[in-house]
Image (cartoon, rainbow, N blue to C red; front, side, top):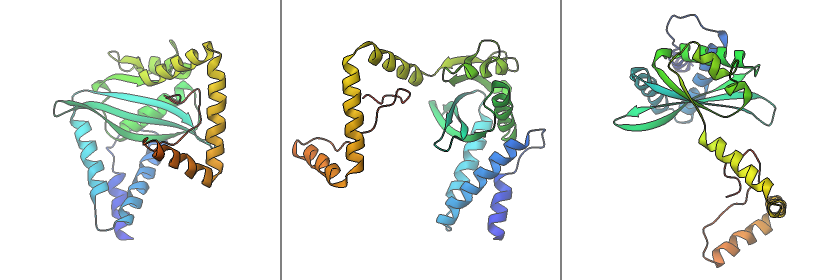
Length: 231
């Protein structure tokens, strides 16, 4: 128990700055996740050490970019996922930072939550050069969106509409413009649901692929907002 307490204190150690309680809660949640990983393999400190190394490396970068996307899970809980992009040994890399729990999904609340988290982990706003987001109005609104509000604090900020989200929108519009896609979508959805409900038929599907020397594939339902779901 003492070891867990020490790890929790180390994971939630933050610089003495003014920030919202939400960021503290986020860091505590992250600490507990790390503790779970450590307790799964009590002989290794690798998860904690990897997180500390990542944070130290990000704080040392002269410039970095952010990628943000909001979502709602099956329990209707709202979240904001955050990634950091930076140059490491001459290579551009993107690393997962956190999954923030969102109480209110308006632009002002999202901005406060994001700034709280960045402050809690010691990221200097002046070193953030760009942000990559989806096209939701609450994020990209010209006057009051998250990006517009963030730009009042970071004057040099460059924003970009995520190419994955743009591709998903293009795929949806293309499918809507061709009536034949409606039949294909309906059949694919039905087949995915049918195979998902029946173990024997699912095995027959895998055996059929093996007979034709095809790579084992799993059918998934088609969703208009899922990137590349029609591949």
